Image (cartoon, rainbow, N blue to C red):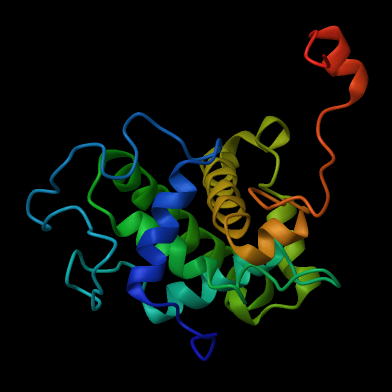
Length: 210
């Protein structure tokens, strides 16, 4: 999966901050809430361009990136309206998120890394292959075991928590891209093609039509 386009560091950092403002990711201890990331450098200045390692080291190994990409694609696959989450580089966003040295991201780092390790081990246990090499049906079969926390078996509660968090990050990343916004038909702040003013009955009610 590493042959997929890798987004720039500046783009991924801006993406992290944009996604932090979404409801599923928002936290009072969110990205940059502590001001200075001691030991890692200053908070990112978004008008500058960074090379990998300039701010903080990224976390995912090549194999973990493959697993994360495959899981992103399982959660949000490509369809007739938009590319898959992996095709948009959501795994890069998740890598940047769990690498940031802030409390929320560091909590997520352990959850995500432990979960990726488990899902790969489970894939090899059930199908003798890593998760990224499974068929779509096999991937769904493993995800179905942990995709709904209230009904997950007690011995898989930790894995269900991982899946819920990974799914939130995947959705948060995907739906802050132009393609994701288009997928849900979000228009945002765009000019109207035609506006004839407020309705006359509204002006009359407000006594502004005189």
